[in-house]
Length: 300
Image (cartoon, rainbow, N blue to C red; front, side):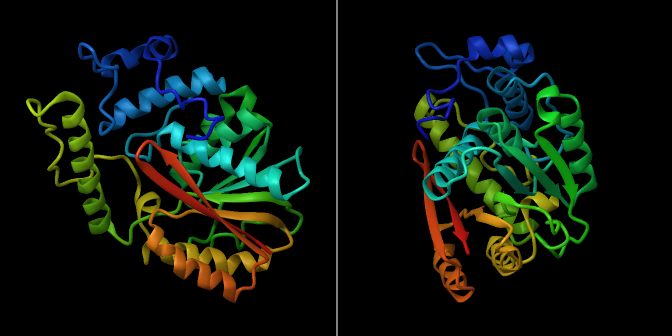
């Protein structure tokens, strides 16, 4: 993980339960092994998030409706820290940073981490009324977020930046965790792969005597709404539309950034960025154990 990631040394459950006592119900302990939780169980991940956000980011309230995407905090923090490095290395802006989170979701994770770690201001956008209602509720119930985060609705689901970025807006960066999948079937297949990977890792840690019973589930056991998980054309189509629209706002945004889940998508993205004549492109890898993720950034 990034050297400034507060979670790089793992979870101290003895401390975390002080901030979310209900986390005790999800902790798995085995003799001689570090405590953990079942990361395939949405309610366990949500409770862990509540503890992390209260301990490290000074929130007094955080919750999301059932069935909404509940992202792991450490990986989201890495994206924020690497954006901070990008800003420091390539712009003169150190203060008064304003970020735009495309698809802020019900959880508001990126604006929470960015505002509480670096003092940044954020606009969080979404197309879902339910997500927006949850996001606004979280902001309204935390005094340290009220002046840092504004929530806006993208009125047209066919657009990303159009209609959202106003004529007088000046953003230091945009960020996005795009819908990875092309349809529900694709999302289900991805879920099954994830469960098999979790099963393998658990077997390595605990031995083969206790098989992970979730490995062959045939329904979506992770939380997430349609617009959070898939869109027509999947990630490549979404990022392509983002690149096209970014041209219109070249003078209002210093850095456009977006997560890219599959490295095989990068070449097509590079070709399109070259076609729209961007000034600079950065591809930044993020490492979390054996997992490698990345985001791409471009500016005009």
